[in-house]
Image (cartoon, rainbow, N blue to C red; front, side):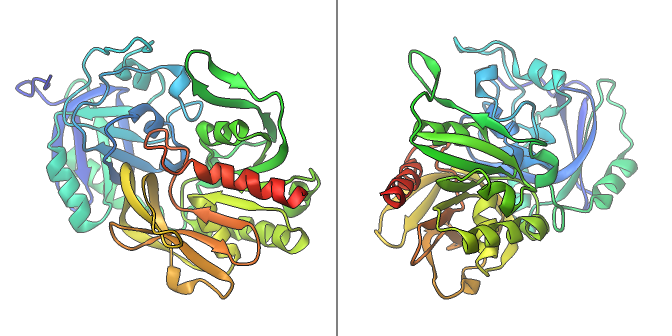
Length: 386
C-alpha cells in the first residue's frame, strides 16, 4: 500500500540541475552519490541490486510494488548489493512469499544501502529519458534534516561513469572454481558432477546466474580476475573463454582486458562468448568502438531482433554503453539489434565461433528466450573437440 507522505520527509534526492525530490527513507541511513538510471522490470529487485553491473548507479524502479516478496540469500547475484541506492514509488510492505527470509528494508540496512519511497517515479523516469542519466545525491536521514545546497553540490561534483574502470573494483581478486547449477524445483541448486567442457570465465562483475548457466550446460568453470592475462588464461588449457558482464566504461576496462583477449584470439582457436561488458570488450578487441548512451537500457522487457534468423527475443538488459555498429571491422557482423532504438545487441566473427551479445541470456530477472546462447557456446566447444 502507499506510504503515508503526510509526515516529515526522511529522504531526499537531489539532481545536479538543482531539482529536489523528498520521500520516505528505508534501509540504511546515510548519503551517497551516483548516476541515476531507471529499470522497468516487474520482478527481481534483489537480483538487480546485487548485479555488479550497477556499480556507481542508483536505480529507480518504474514498477510500484517493490519489496513485497521480501528477500532470500538464494537470489543474490553477488555477496552484497552493488547498486548505490533504490528509489521506488511505494515503500516496501511486509513480504508475502514462502521463500522470504528477511524484509527488503532490513536487508538493505544490514548491507549499508539506502532506499527511498514516496517518489513520483514517473516524473523521475521522464527526466532521465529527456535529459539523460543524471548525477544525483541521495540522503536518508531519519530526523529529516537536509542540507540541500550540500546535496546539490555533491551531485554536481560526481564525475560520472565515463572513464571509470569499475570492473576491477567488483571483480574477484583470485581465481576460483564454480560448479553450482541453476535453481530448479524441488531440489534448488544442484552441483555439476559430469562436466564436458573446461571454461575460463573472466570476471568483470559476473552474476552468479551466468556462472550457474555455464555449469548447467555442462561446463567446468574456472573464474579468473578481470586483469587476467592471456598467458594465465591459456595455461588452464580451456575449451572455451567466457567474458562476463560488468560495470563502468568499456574503454577504461579495455586498457588491460583488450590486449588479453586479442592475444587469446591470436594464439588459439577456442570458442569465445561474451555478455554485456564482455560483449563490449570483445568488440573492442576486434577493432570496434564503444560509446556512452543517453540513459542506457535497463529492464526485463527489451525486444531484440536476430538479424540472421528474423526471430525476435524479449530480453533482460542492463547497460549504459553500447558498441558502435558502424565501427565493426571486416570479418565481424552485427547479429542482433534493439527494436527500441536500433542499437547493437550482438556480434560474431564470420570464420570462427566467437560471438557476444549486449543483453543477458541468463535473465535473473527476466525472460528465458535467449538461454539457447549458452547451449550454442557448449555446442561450439563440442564441435571443436570433434
